[in-house]
Image (cartoon, rainbow, N blue to C red):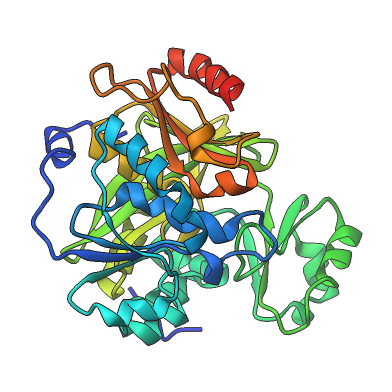
Length: 385
């Protein structure tokens, strides 16, 4: 295609239904989904996120969990046993990525395949493609090469290179973004030239940045893929739940997801060596001429939607929403889910996904229910928490 890395609820098909009941034969995994090497500092409870991988693990896998989560182990195991969710019972209470090297017979499953993971379980092609597409500027270059539609974006190798002529050409309102960022850090909305000039000054002169036209919509989709046997397989499409600009969760299913928009890039990434789960954020824009879909960025890793999606697949749940709830409790054993906990016979109820942050008063929860029942389930759970 002309660009290389060296350049600067379940799919509603019978196959997917059976996939939730019959696990394919494969080597056991070692799961380390700690996010501390790929997240913004200061996020409350981010050192506790390794626990959300438990629900996506299988018996026979090894899983690395933060030692602070060990007191919660009996309660989460009891919850998963009652709802019929199988998982690993072989725990390493240590999130050091060095453990990945100690089990070469286990396939590595990580949140993000970065420098630490590459040192311990080398996979040069996987590492290079993740590093490549993790840059929003390189994402834009690849999108242009492959014909993937994106918002109007001006890319700069260094913030110090932005000149007055660029300020004049910027598409206001716009966003100034660090080309490489996590958790939304390094993003500034600019209404006019002076606001953009001020935002530029917050970056060191050598930091790569981009100026992107604001996309006027409140609908954003997350299109997830998984690399399987050298192919990019469609995994799930979810819609983001937003409160203002703050991401609160995801809803499944999405009617007529626009896979064709990002498929060329998904295929290219897997050809280049991408492994595991990865995803694209896509904006849905209503125009007079019809609906337009614009790719915003690629997450070359698991993301917040991946964990409830995997759990929903395992349990055969088609309709669900997942969102974060605050809670007064600091111990899972204190939370009473009687009458709300997921019931396999009815296919409805509450499933704890990111349970570790209960220690700081928050939980990511999957609510399995038809859309008309989801709000009532939300309200009932909020009262319990």
